[in-house]
Length: 224
Image (tube, rainbow, N blue to C red; front, side):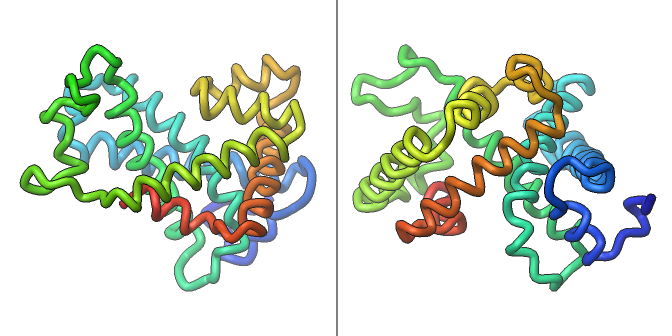
């Protein structure tokens, strides 16, 4: 079998794009996940001073979680890879976006309702990402647009996916469970679960694109 160091762009895309759970595809997925995990770990441990109080084990767990999600994101977006750079470089950029987005989301998720001000806002100490000089960055129309898109995504999630796909997505995304635990709960294995999630995300993406919502538009709307 071809090692990851020897793969060309075309070989990466071909191996990852194979249908089913072939040995070649399984190997490529695992090699990609390992490479992305290593890159994310380096970023978290060397470039993020705000994580300096975490242990190596905690950062390793974060890198594993982000790498799993990033692997799924890469599989979902294989068709958008144009070959303008090395495939692994492109995949690592996807992984960095996943890591940064997840850490940004976790920053706000950790605040309970008790930490909100009487006006329903987050404390000033955590508003810096959303303000400049005390002035909100987001315009009211942007918030309305986000709510509209969230409504469409939620409707698609509930109406388009099969019960099994929905259960897997909820466990991974909403409940934030490790992929191994989700696979055990569904009576399947990691690679089969990757395929299940890949199909679910493709189904959601195709449906949303038919309604005029591209993945890039949705990501851009919520990552401004």
